[in-house]
Image (spheres, rainbow, N blue to C red):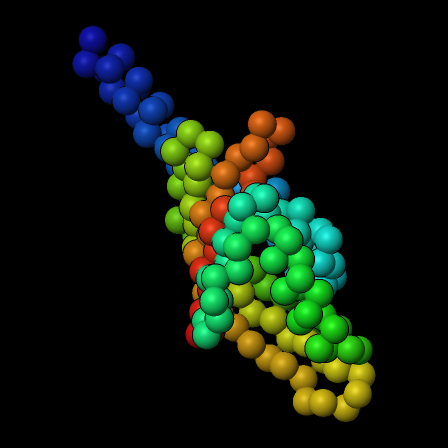
Length: 147
């Protein structure tokens, strides 16, 4: 009988280790919505103050001030751009206390009002997250590459 009770305790502990995926659901939806809306302020709110983005072919973008400038620069280079669709599918969510990680695939379609051909791109991201004192997950590190 003691073994059965121990098995129940162990299985309960195992079940809780699979909860992190649900824990990131709100963060992932906020990231999806901010990206789809091309909302720089909403995207920046998902970052830690000292967050670092590692994009292909660029130097690391470190800190919210640098991230904000990068977002503004990209937006200014794409006048009339509209994100028609943005799909985000995340996997393998893991947490260790207030730190977490997951990897995601993304697919986006952007149209332009100036007649430029639409952009249809896809990529993979690795996100390292931290849960703040307010309980919200924010990006500490992001690494992205095209598929």
